[in-house]
Image (cartoon, rainbow, N blue to C red):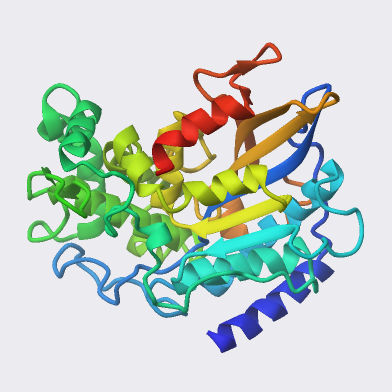
Length: 411
């Protein structure tokens, strides 16, 4: 980890010298309001598969491509891409007056909490290194590899988790016909994925042979996808990460996957989250450790709070709030590497407080290139929060309304 942090320092210096300055206005505050608190729940950056053998033997006809880093770690390319986001976020926060225009933020003004995986720790380090270079803002996390219950509330028995309610929520997300009907609607995409995985092989490979299933929830365990759709989600995410890391196209899907394939197949990853992470009861229970950090970020002394977590965490918050996004090159509602749900507290001239949600992420091609964002802003969209209307703006919550939205995850 020390060597990786040294690498991050070198990357941060290179990014600072590259002139990655502010882009044009990106969803600045509505008239009569100013942003005074910002909270980001961000997915880590690009990583390799989390296992040395990415999928069971036989799924792919050829060996999987190699990676320059240990399984599951943030890649050097991924660190550069995260650094671009840190620089862009910092420029925007200074323009809004949330961070000082020059110099370092005051002690305690920026709070960073990361999960204990290397990729989440290193993602927060890379973001901080370009958000406020040389300021030494601490990254708070447990020792690498030590489980952190903040990021796994259901497994830790927190959050008032009820397996029966979880199963009912998943059944509602499945809709009529259950998992078999969902698989049938994705048959053509499964066939395309099999062709990429199998190449010239005619049998004995691919993901679609085993029927899809969902294992029911139990105490401390979420419902789990199995079979074709489960393996398709994993394989599709691996292809997306290969592409996002800048690998030559000859290595992306063994040269058998096009950029449009990578985008289309990411629907499998988004589908897994739609079924298993976004249903409100599951989302609220799994956010039980993170939700207090989000609330404190909107009501406490820190003006900027970053939570460096995982795609599941981001999908949970998206489901709890009922918000949706579409990052170019990635399926709708699929949490992008480095993508974040951004919660902004806004204040009017009389001191009344409001909250809005945004989603900020690099487009897939921007992650792949890891080029400066100064002339090409990332995807940055205001996401209306259902059930909220304040100051005549649909989707804008009062602070009290937003706290009520978050309440199911606060126990």
